[in-house]
Image 1 (cartoon, helix red, strand yellow):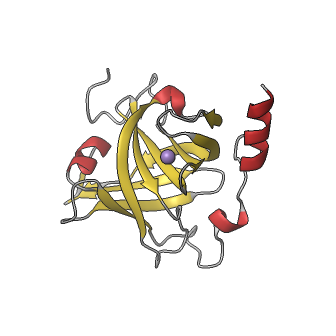
Image 2: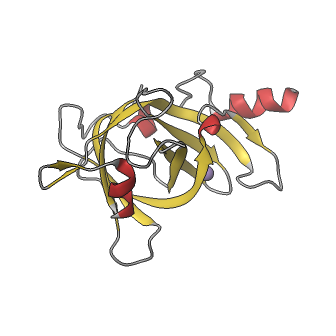
Length: 181
Ligand code: MN
């Protein structure tokens, strides 16, 4: 295990992020950020927005293993997370958390309920912030786009780019090809 707070992993490579589009009981988006060797995870019912005016609910879920990042396929009925999973966006990210002129490691920021990061995805780009609710339990967060050159009130990747960033497939195509196996 790398030491906490190093913001480095896998031989010093930039940490990865993934957004899984997950057609489970309800369609939702799972944001996952590599932190200290695992994928910290949040379920975002409406998916991420590029508009800084949108506050997207993000409910923290179980950490996932790094190997799960590029999983695309169908989780069978009866198993945790049953349903079709798409790699809706994937890329690397940079921690951008600074408090009082100090760089704050991701793990520390998350522990204190606030983390800023810059996504380098195929769809999601630029600065985002995750902020935990003071009340309402320690699993409830908001995901918000911060103002920068990538912020947009017109580009809505959830609406405009529904298919896989990895294979270009739709949820239906992923479900179909999995059923043929
Ligand atoms: Mn999910």
